[in-house]
Length: 212
Image (tube, rainbow, N blue to C red):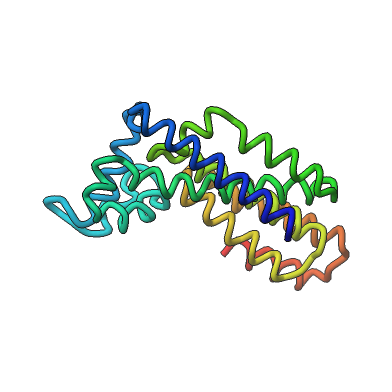
């Protein structure tokens, strides 16, 4: 836990410093999509046809859902912080996901710290998480889906399977490109169960539980 806390604190610091610098330089809206993403969250309550039907009509809805309560505050919306704050939070969670994936791969916390640093120090990601862009959420979902699938493959526990399924769903809600993940993940679940010599009925149950 101490290593995870240290990684989280470092990620929060990096996120805040990068976001403040980007906003101070007036570059939070540098990408045209940033304003569009933020507008999706605002349209839920401020449009000709308000409602949650505004979400998910082109991009996956997770980022826009997180923006909705922040976009209520006009200063946050106009300064684009309503879009930056969710992206920053997902950046921090993504860095933690990189740490846990590194630990799962080689069973060494130092490897996890190196993986976390590689993600946290990426200048492109630091800039993107400072604006209303989707990339930090995409990285978060994919890293945690991979880490939780690796953990299930090691432990074979049903609770870890449920966690892997949840993160796979989150990944799909961050990028449509992850739609293949539930099916690829099911194959990995079956292979992991077979390697542990689970009975056929248990393998089928676990595979269906992950897929649904």
